[in-house]
Image 1 (cartoon, rainbow, N blue to C red):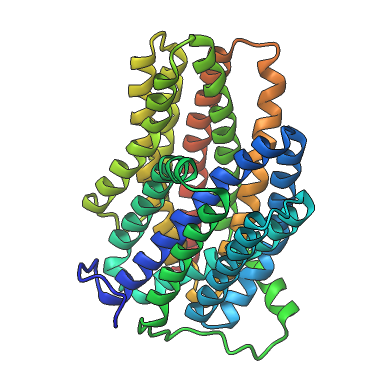
Image 2 (cartoon, one colour):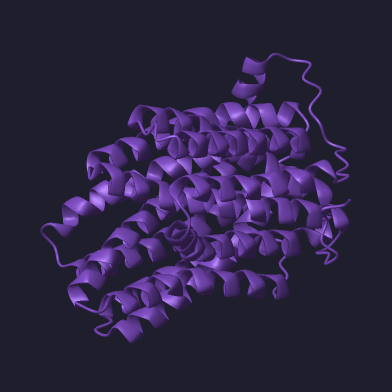
Length: 407
């Protein structure tokens, strides 16, 4: 029996990866959404939730570069199978512990840390696999489809997670999520993914790891891009926190909370679809940062919104710009970095972007105690526009130098 849907995207190999990623990604996001809420409900302690989140983040930041190095040395399909197996077994273990009534926060914490290990291994492997299984002329469509799928997972996870958790007991809930990983495993096991690119592992693991670090610093264009992306990610985290304060201050119903915060994810999905139609072959980073500048412009307009409907529209439009920009950046990574080094790059990128989130939130939290949140939103939007425009100028100059040097 083949666990492969008959609807194909691009090619059969991509379709197999797509459905396997969607199932595991949806289950993963549901767990990440529900688990902290469940622990808060059981313990009535926000400290436990904070510890869980902090330990998971630290584990991912530390492990990501190492997992990226493993990805470049081994077969991507095998690594995805290992990652999904780890997460599946841990969810079954969590279900058994819960059903038997052995709830202990330390057990949950240890399980979640090891669970993070599986997620950290799966992410770079799946990202590199996408580059391998599609042709260069199909890359933009493939990245856009994956971006759409990823955002759809984020939209569905809170709804499905809340529904399942309200219908089933916690133990059965974890078993159902484990089933999603089982289905993902079956799709991968019955797939026929040809990997032409595989690191031969002739040198030691540490040498490969150091080589991965050098990827970030040898190329000036890539180094400048990563620095700019980190700044924009910090600003994005700050904008999310500020938006929550603005929405609370509006004193609107909880229905409006949902409508406002779903605006950007829906916009991102539309933006990813739009990027499939707007084909870009050269200077793709310029288009990406133009989209970031447009996103920042709508963030500025969000600071001026005095009604929830207007705020939702501007947030939705900023999501479209973000969806297009993120797709273009995803294409640039895969075109610029050799496939045999992409695992390490995605590992380091994941760690760098994850670190930037608490930095942005802590910095903004201090500002929001003394400054009007709408003003903070306007400043953050302006900084996003300035960062994007400066990045276009600097990267354009570096690219021009590189062309002149090659000639």
